[in-house]
Length: 185
Image (cartoon, rainbow, N blue to C red; front, side):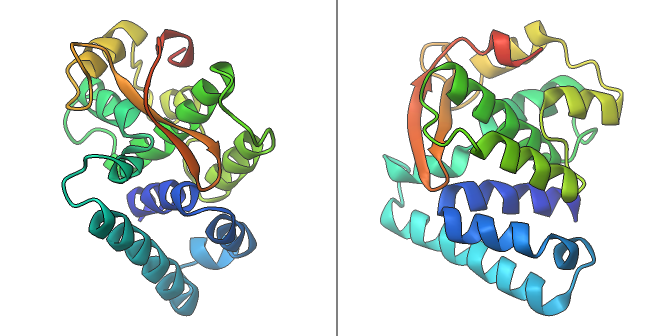
């Protein structure tokens, strides 16, 4: 369930303010698995992914938004070991790291977004960033190992990781090349 919620969080960042606000307003119902609320949230997430994939079936452009948080997440999963950290939990931490990277790179346009996502992550029982992931799992996740894993990610170009970074909810920068080191501590 937590893994699914990590993907829901990512999808809200992709979809935009309406879905993000809906999650924030219904966090208790989501955590307690209220059937009607969850049906609505799941339908919205499926609709978002279907729309994105249909518009870019070959992942040549805008479909890359679905990779939000995943460059960090795949490195986390590889470094921790297969199955140690659930994929969606790693994605949630990766979204937090992506927000930190966006702010540091000067791309973030919505200064309130990182704190909103941090609060929502915590309310959903998810790690808001790598530090919280390390604390909650006991996995060291050394920065040098995470960087090595990122260099081998399918989205890297000539060993340089590429990131999807949020400017605002529903507005994402694609194929951003940056040094991930400061965001891995």
